[in-house]
Length: 288
Image (cartoon, rainbow, N blue to C red; front, side, top):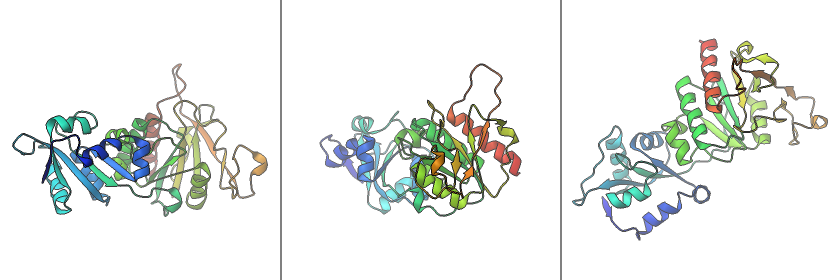
């Protein structure tokens, strides 16, 4: 195991630059903090590029948590196991550095156009959701509820954001997912999905009246600030034109059923991750 104690080390300097999400995506990298999350990334088949953990002055490792031994063994086998002094490690770790490790993986292509058909079940579509913590929370729920897939549509953040990985507890590596533009996600839904619902405050019917028992059914949830607006009124059209322009709709377009969550208070909406949890487990209730 290589021991690093200087902030001038090339690997450390590169790692710090990868904390910038734009640079990370340009480099095709994924940074994972924590042994449990690292192990889930390894088990998902991602290629490990580097593995860092804190060591004391004698070079002894300090972490003793579930999953760390398996992660260490894999890192040693591929020759990328590195120890870092505790002072330096605190600078490279996202969040609390105690009992954590940092791993760099090669990112996989998650473009929705390259996804095959999802398994039967409910598909959650997150439209323009901005906060990576919310994206991660949705993946965590999706893993627990056995959601077939999560699709990110025009989202500013990606599932490999450090905050998304952390809030998902590594579920971003366990749930099938893809990202794309509205046109790309629309094409995927039209190819593989039987029914599509959209969650809207102004929806005409209750979400609990929706039938989520079709072989594959998708539910679209909008951004925290703007909801869905005039997006996702139809799906299945063959053109890439805006779905809000009714003149561009082809004959094969289908109406998306707008539904709402019945709410008794003055607040008219929930956090998108909470809404996604309600959707996912209502699907579980209906299907089982």
